Amino acid sequence: MSNATINHQFKLAARPKGTVKDSDWSRTEEPVRAPHDGEVVIQILYLSLDPAMRGWMNDTKSYIPPVGIGEVMRALAVGRVTASRNPKFAIGDHVTGLLGVQEYAYSNGQGLTKVDPKLAPLPVYLSTLGMPGMTGYFGLLEVGQPKAGDTVVVSGAAGAVGSVVGQVAKIKGARVVGIAGGADKCRYLVEELGFDAAIDYKTENVAEALKTHCPDGVNVFFDNVGGDILDAVLTRLARGARIVICGAISQYNNTTPVKGPANYLSLLVNRATMTGIVVSDYYDRAGEAAMVMAGWIQSGKLKTREDVVEGLEAFPRAFDMLFSGANNGKLVLKVA
Image 1 (cartoon, one colour):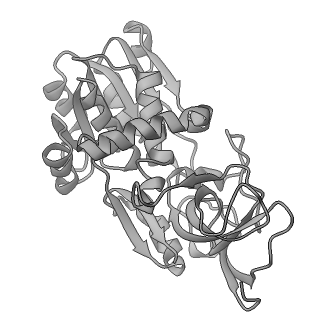
Image 2 (cartoon, rainbow, N blue to C red; image 1 turned 180 degrees about the vertical axis):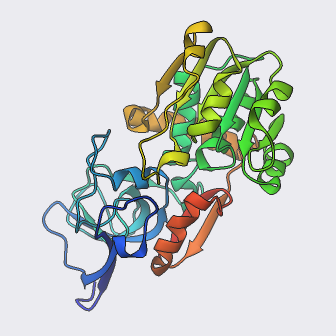
């Protein structure tokens, strides 16, 4: 590697208040150094843009420490090893891990996973075969526990996690209703992914639509959105329903406290449960899930869609797309 190689980075400059502003980022650059003993240098090829990143920017107690001011923004990525002093990794290996919003990263190998670009395109390792897919797989099957014939409702259904949840629920014999924003996304859910119905929260009354599409109630609700949509689904629970709390994207840019569920007593009346899913709890089983889902992809049972934006410099604009709903499928930034 030439000493002239420069690493461009996005660092957290300030803790955002509400919607993330351009001034909350600082753009920096530094020369790429040789790896220390036990390290590898990774050229980042694709970055994963995920709603969880907004939570990592807040200085609050969570399942993972916040990104520090002046630190490279945390992000999952897939890249290629360009220099190695670690016997477990060779130059040319493709790997995924929390590598950050930058062009090059250093790693001691912890948290790195080798991937094979011959088995699937690299962006798929950041979507269906990566964190979003694993979240959907384990959140639905381990927490939601759908049975054949159950009615499963998914919010944020056209996103990276929601689209996997709905398709896996169909594979398991459930009836699936997706909630998404816009006619195109709803059409995609039904016509391409095989959902039984889709509700457009932008033009429909969600509570009324749930009465129509879930006449016997909701057995499993996989929630990526929170807020009013969670409240609406709480009014339609079947007895023994399981609610999986994966995220609350409707609340992430709030400048006021998070809006909790007003209709939570429905949990009591219907003997229902509400349980959170954090995918890192299942990382020791990631290989098992990847094998199963790769098989479904190859057989055509599971479809994957990535929305790829070009260039590291596009990061702030692309990150904003997560919260406007502008992306179709898993949002990925092509770095190199």
